[in-house]
Image (cartoon, rainbow, N blue to C red; front, side, top):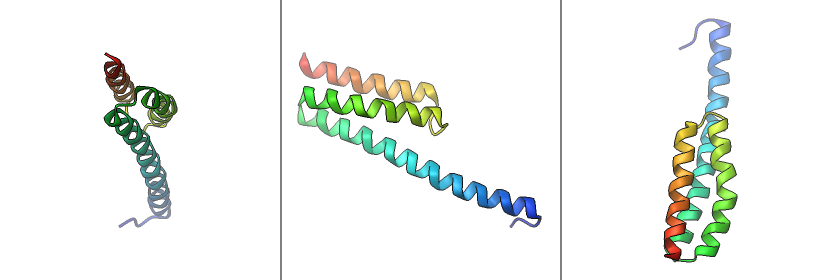
Length: 88
């Protein structure tokens, strides 16, 4: 447990930041799930449209430090390739 005033303040800040990060990560995962559901339904147009809304959310999570930028790029790339494969 934190003893000094500064350590107590840092504990409060960390708790607040953890909540924000948890919400951002959850939001990103929700957008990814929506894309995956559209892919599973086999609707290429709908999946492409949902990916267009999900991509900024995923990249914003990378920008905020929730996920690494390469991880975010990989997720977007793999979703895009799966959508592209629907048309083939």
